[in-house]
Length: 331
Ligand code: HEC
Ligand code: HEC
Ligand code: HEC
Ligand code: HEC
Ligand code: HEC
Ligand code: HEC
Ligand code: HEC
Ligand code: HEC
Image (cartoon, rainbow, N blue to C red; front, side, top):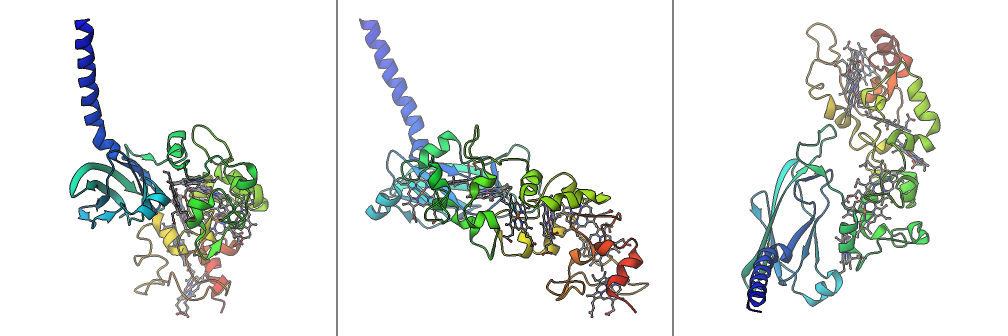
């Protein structure tokens, strides 16, 4: 009897101890991006609050602390419940996030996360950091009270942000000047699986295969060339193209030269295609490409971004450097 009583007290004490230990972490959680993950976009910082209820948060990003963000408002609570969505500006590379939760001026919780923002196309995921994955069963459970996370097919195929199940949260993907055909009509399922394990919405096929399923002639055309350009040779398309939308022509992730220089760093620093002894280097950008007046002059005016029949992937079937010059500079 006594012994059981003692055990009970011990258990209660242990439980209280655990609860006290657990409580601060429960009061505030960094949902996205999680600690030691990396992201490729600077879009959201998503927090979840819990018990004990906090009424305000501050966010310290890389040492700079925000003002107190008031979340005690009834209207806010009714709409967003315990979820806080902020729009941070990550800096390229490592970012240190510290969030603190307050109630009546007292700090009740503090959480920190170390994340990496991989902005550069060529950046290699850092050691010890995992890609952030949102659509896991645990991740989705946090959103399911208010967002439709397991939509029936009809809602998956809605062709506007308002009628499509992905529209609540992913409208920003299409907020650019040019929207890629299938994404523009919210045909997300053409490329993303409806159900995949362990996380949902994985790609239907490998990237090149996926692109090839619609751009059939293209990938064949690339493969028939003698020299495939590095990333194309290993089936990467989205390192240069955004599959959803872009402000640049050809759905490029940046201006053509920026895309190229992300990997071929420093190539624009003065020695590329020098015009003879003591001459200035050839321009690498300009208002008009003489071979196609609708386009700007860029690296892509001389080099085919996908591949070519010469080592240097010259445009227009040019076999030699001289042949290339002649495409634009006929006497
Ligand atoms: C208590 C309800 C609730 C929960 C839980 C919730 N949300 Fe929301 N969320 C909303 C409401 C309401 C909106 C606004 C919808 C609108 O504007 O039509 C919204 C909008 C959003 C947006 C769009 C923000 C913008 O305007 O760019 C994102 C992203 C989002 N939620 C993500 C999430 C994620 C991720 C989760 C789970 C971790 C989640 N939400 C959980 C209620 C909730
Ligand atoms: C409740 C909001 C919400 C809804 C609804 C939602 N997503 Fe997401 N999803 C997110 C957030 C937040 C992320 C992580 C940030 C980002 O990549 O924008 C994410 C990430 C993803 C990713 C990257 C992989 C991953 O799991 O992190 C894919 C792919 C994706 N979503 C596809 C979809 C598709 C397809 C739909 C519609 C069937 C959908 N999502 C509906 C919030 C949502
Ligand atoms: C043409 C094929 C294609 C279509 C259509 C498509 N996606 Fe994607 N999506 C991809 C590929 C490929 C990736 C992986 C490469 C990357 O990270 O951009 C991706 C990645 C994502 C990601 C994670 C990376 C990021 O950029 O945030 C999200 C979220 C996402 N897709 C949501 C959607 C939603 C929502 C739709 C419907 C509006 C959609 N996708 C339609 C091909 C597609
Ligand atoms: C479901 C079919 C479909 C898939 C899959 C698809 N595309 Fe497209 N793509 C289109 C359509 C339709 C257009 C033309 C309309 C437009 O410009 O949006 C297009 C246009 C393009 C263009 C612009 C072409 C031009 O002449 O300027 C590029 C670049 C492109 N897609 C790249 C890709 C890449 C990279 C992938 C793989 C991630 C891909 N597409 C997968 C249907 C698809
Ligand atoms: C190294 C960067 C890069 C890679 C990798 C890449 N592309 Fe492109 N792609 C470009 C550029 C640059 C353009 C030209 C855009 C312009 O002229 O406006 C282009 C144009 C296109 C076009 C439209 C013009 C054309 O040539 O028909 C399609 C379609 C296309 N790419 C598909 C793909 C597919 C599919 C893959 C993967 C197998 C791929 N690209 C890989 C950079 C790239
Ligand atoms: C994701 C990285 C990446 C991007 C982006 C990229 N390249 Fe490359 N490029 C490579 C790799 C890898 C090789 C093959 C290795 C090598 O020869 O240096 C290569 C090779 C080349 C070659 C042939 C070099 C030789 O010695 O034969 C040319 C020319 C070239 N790239 C031009 C471009 C242009 C133009 C762009 C922009 C449209 C571009 N690259 C974008 C990675 C990239
Ligand atoms: C006026 C035409 C022209 C333009 C514009 C041009 N290139 Fe080249 N590029 C050449 C020629 C010609 C070669 C062959 C090597 C040589 O003789 O200089 C070459 C070689 C290369 C090589 C392989 C040799 C090396 O230097 O590494 C790469 C990579 C390359 N270019 C990338 C680029 C990138 C990236 C841009 C844009 C910033 C660009 N090129 C713009 C004509 C051009
Ligand atoms: C895709 C078209 C293109 C190719 C290929 C090309 N150039 Fe040019 N080149 C230009 C443009 C555009 C200018 C700038 C013209 C201007 O400013 O009026 C230029 C300028 C020049 C100039 C300066 C003379 C002037 O008119 O200001 C010389 C010299 C030159 N190029 C030599 C070459 C050589 C040598 C090659 C071969 C290695 C070559 N170009 C390949 C488009 C090209």
